[in-house]
Image: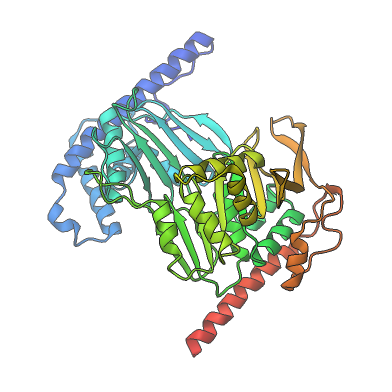
Length: 481
């Protein structure tokens, strides 16, 4: 989304030759910077005019209307250039007071998944999987710092030279990371991983070709049958989205404890206890780590533990939980492939300081984790489940891992989007017998060696709807009682 601070019909004619076009772009960037500086100056005047004693007595809508009225009054007293878009200026003054200033329009764009600010004059967004440079700018580094400080203050944290990094979460669940000088050499840097206006659902994943119905049918059975499962993948591959969606298959009535560094999970189940880590204070005290929360969660009588992302020493405590009665637990991990995910787990266990032989660690991992789902973000922005594998145990000191389903890339289309197909390897996982023992039967041809075509997915979706309906019915019975 590009913004023009001037009205249509202003002096922004595009010249035909290449040099003229470059000059036009530079001029547009300069005008946008001037627009932001003008807005910043008016915003400071607006804050001086605002009656702070009345703020607590007003609703958000009333306060927004009050700010709009004051802004309109300030503009009437100024002699603005006739080409300035006053309506946009007023809208952005309201956004400057309540939101993220120049970034606010992107926070309302459902197609934008990431907002990346590399200093005051360089903003990129990822829209529909494609990274795009915008002409959005801030007035200067101080303007950008005001936005970053406001975000940090909302979650009770601060960012300054003594504490130049911050992780935070916006009210809509979007995740924010900011880093400022002296660590960021080119000025303040802000990264926002947005939560969509409507989180992607199972139907969306199927429609986008991120997963095939056969894979989803197997994962439904595995989650319902309390099989420990780990989702691996790179940054932006869709790990959290997948975890959110397969949580839909957890039967109602089970107590779930979620543990995250920055709360992102929106589980589609009831009876969920959400825990979040806490960073150290400015004095270096009071930190609560994921490992602390995993240990504490074991005292909370959980049926399942969902660790948003395993990153360090908490890996050992998670494996212990999976091996000691908390079956059906789920987690995610950053990794380039399935083998790399298991190697990273081994390294994380070693971070605890426990001097355990490699073979003992591997045996522990193999007995705790049964299914590994690997996701990847491919060229063109497409997310795909690349592999669903089963760990059978160890063989000759190595993981005995078998691929059940996979995705094969076959080139690109005219738009640069990845082309390919899902397939089944013909391997029937050992967990099939365990699932039968708990009354979950899978079709005999589900694992047949073949390319997977778009079969009817209504059964998968309706099964999830059945679980939700059962939850509602159980809840109504409890209320009646």
